[in-house]
Length: 222
Image (tube, rainbow, N blue to C red; front, side, top):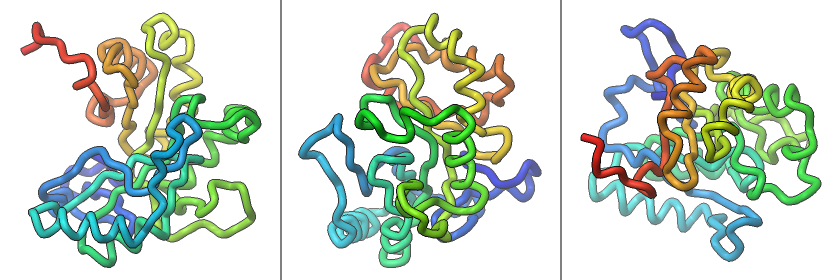
């Protein structure tokens, strides 16, 4: 759960329209995309705010209360569009900061080329000050919408995870911002390795969310 406070009695979920109490989340779509654009997914762009509003309104009529929108920096994330969806439908929208796998960024993109400190500083603005409307490709001011969760996409092998552990934590910023870290597992593997690496690096277990484990279901786990 994306948090803005350490005190259990005052924990809040950061939405694009401001913090809410956890009990206000209600029925939640915990992993979705309202806006998305990636060279790794040609022809699968989501960039129509009116269509997003229409679809979320329909889901709202079916009982949906909240959406965790997990499009990270550099992939067509639209803070103003997410605010418009939330304002028009009454559905809470929790946005993401952080980064996806390199395959989602074209060669020459600043996310690929920048030193670790710059991406870390860039995505830390999301939970603390607001998301950038153009993901730092222009000089536009930060949007009022803040991110409530940090996305990360680690290597798929346990050995590679271990080698990248320190870099990954510095890039995540979960301890500095108080936000949960949502980990894209790509093929649904390395769950235990991810948890081991993050907890060893000081990330609290309750701040770790693992996505796409259904892509590799383990029938021996109960």
